[in-house]
Length: 492
Image 1 (cartoon, one colour):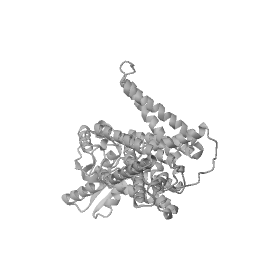
Image 2 (image 1 turned 60 degrees about the vertical axis):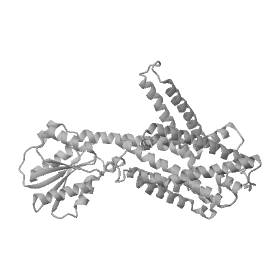
Image 3 (image 1 turned 90 degrees about the vertical axis):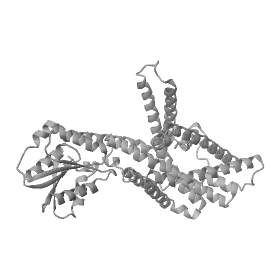
Image 4 (image 1 turned 90 degrees about the horizontal axis):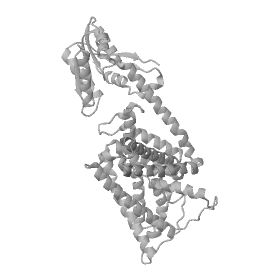
């Protein structure tokens, strides 16, 4: 919605671009996606200037408008659009629709609480100060624009935004007008950037708890959650194209989702304070409890109003999509629990299964953890080789230590090499250590035995990272290396 609103600001200033709103919106999404893929620090730097530019520009407009309202400001240049014909009488239902639409303009400041870890120490104090400043700026600018729009009789139009009409009324088609429109477009693109900062982090938490595919846990070399960023960019582009970058068509989809999230988060905090007090009214932190309860009640009412008033205008789509997403996440969770259960192995069983067998040549077994799939691969390697080495690339420090501990507990007599990867790269360090061992062993051929578990259903493969396939592709160009895959088939 922010992207489409930003494009509307550009099209208001340059009417020739009005037919190309969808293309401009997709281009803006691509830019924001690439900026976030470069990392948090770079994307924050890119969007700092538009924030101050927008606050300054709208502040100047409000000051000029108030001065004109008091009779000593600039002479206004009236912008007149014919108001649309009344489509329905002024009823409580119409007022509720306006209330629902207006409530969405107050969203966005919650990004501060979501992005608390990104603040400098002390994080809580800096976030609290930023939130207060943002609230004061929001109240001032929003109230000023609303007052001046009413005073100058500005009418919403599909061809021009209210901000554009207000700017042209106060400063005409001067240079300042185009500066205001540019700052407005950029700040709206910045508003969209909050989703690119928060959604990948949320997707990481869901993937960590096994409710989304594991790919969402991985961070690129710049420590950005690349999978979440790219996924959000693709889905946003599809939605903008489907809705033709029309802000009015996107508001119902946005409003229901965002206020449902607000209501659930506030309700969750109410439950948190109650549990912390162990159900005792006497120990309850009443200030926090009542604050979150009031927030849950307020946002819950807004959610209900939006759902009823905007149901025919697109809110029904969210009502359908939400249960589907929840069902999909529960299905993913069940799958991962099933995989973990089938791969889990006790140290005693590991010692029993890794039996001594005749060995003939050199083999390397890359493993991610000590599980049934890796044990099967190690067993096979010992059957075909008289020199077997297990290799683990530790993309996180604790993974190598945990594997070494389990290796010692199981009493496995297979050498284990732990390769530290501070930049969380997997394939590069793994290929490098395989080439190094190949040179040190001095054998004409070396066998790389790759463990791989095969899900019970073909469609479940998209939930896994396909590391075995990627490793085969990386080793395919190396000479004198035999690649063997040992599949472990999971059951229904």
